[in-house]
Length: 233
Image 1 (cartoon, one colour):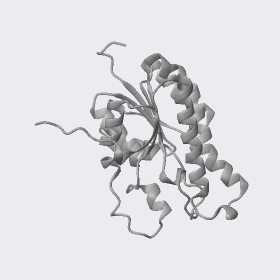
Image 2 (cartoon, one colour):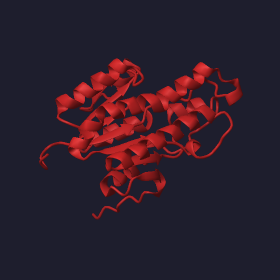
Image 3 (cartoon, helix red, strand yellow):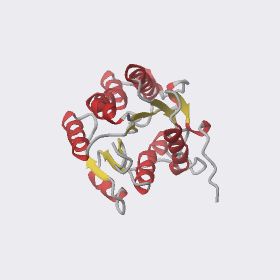
Image 4 (cartoon, helix red, strand yellow):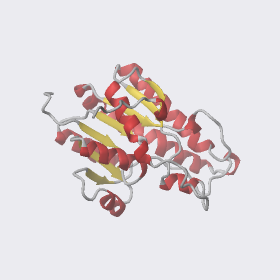
């Protein structure tokens, strides 16, 4: 790859929240960006005014994963894969003992199994470009909060897959806890509550870009702990 070749990123879950904020930032920075979401209309509206490739679909669907993989091949490769899409599970959130087995399965599949299946399909493309993997995690992956059991376990599983993949491939792999954000999913977790005090997802993006620029050793990082370079006027 020459220095004139645009870098390519695939971000799952790009119709809102951190996925959308990162997709817009990379697009503005000259990257070729692909993202997806289950709601086609919402995705199209979110990406209006950008050059991001929006692909409607569910990562848990094998046909959709194949479509994303084919598009990456058409675009010439992959420099960055960000596994951002996730689900809280049934709402309102509830204790583990109140979850049905199929509901637990769905959260684990959506947040860990399906994204890792996409990673497996794209590993060759990441190898070819010496690419980077980012799994968007949560403090619930390492702490234990009432009603967050299925979600937290799924994020812990994603962390483990991401970091083991890094050990196995030697490529940079990061599990990143972005912290609380003012997103639709966070609002779903706290129905009826005012979450306006949470930071916007756009505030997390500079820390993610700094991580990608610095390429530290693979590991689990809290976004706020990643120093953002000070721009000199």
